[in-house]
Image (cartoon, rainbow, N blue to C red; front, top):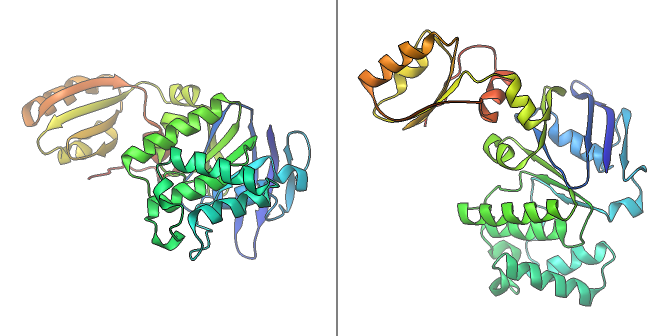
Length: 303
């Protein structure tokens, strides 16, 4: 569906994207992940022909981007691009007509999607009157109403509460099952891990990790421990046999430096914490992300 090869983009003082290639098939959810400033927001406009690469090619459905290609692509930008004074229904219809959909059909589809997103009572509201989450729903509708073959979503869960995150997740899975190729760009590793089959991790403009998610996780072994507890777990990050610690209020993900460390860890936590769960697991995508884009030192995240 999408094949981007050796993309490069350099500005006056910054090499924003350096030799990035990616391929997404129909019926596939592809995670384009990386920290802020990694090059994701330059890569996507090159795929969409919004900016021209200095080098490299992009093929969508086997051909270069042109006006006919534009109508088989749906794009949700991270920044909102809605006309704040316009009404919700009129806004959706307007964007649909830009894709060549006649007004009566655009209105029918818009009302169906507004019902799905529980926004039927907002059809005559102005965009500026909507909450941040409801504005995000309208932008999602604009990106998929024309039934695109390729859907590119930049931080689609931004502003959505947990209930609406589940709703959007269900819709994305329906699109995937319908054969759509979906690129999901985010720095929220938990969402990418739940949704994506393949990932491409970009840092400082270059690909540092890519492939099938399960294969990627297996490369990092099974020396990670998920620990659920009651008590103060702040000490976990300072243990000498812990390579990496992601510590929350009552949960931690720990990477050990070897199997011999397990007994020591068990002794420590049993003496200082009330342990509810202690299990060996594959590392999470979040811990892999920290390992690949960090500075090589022990990492601690507290909440």
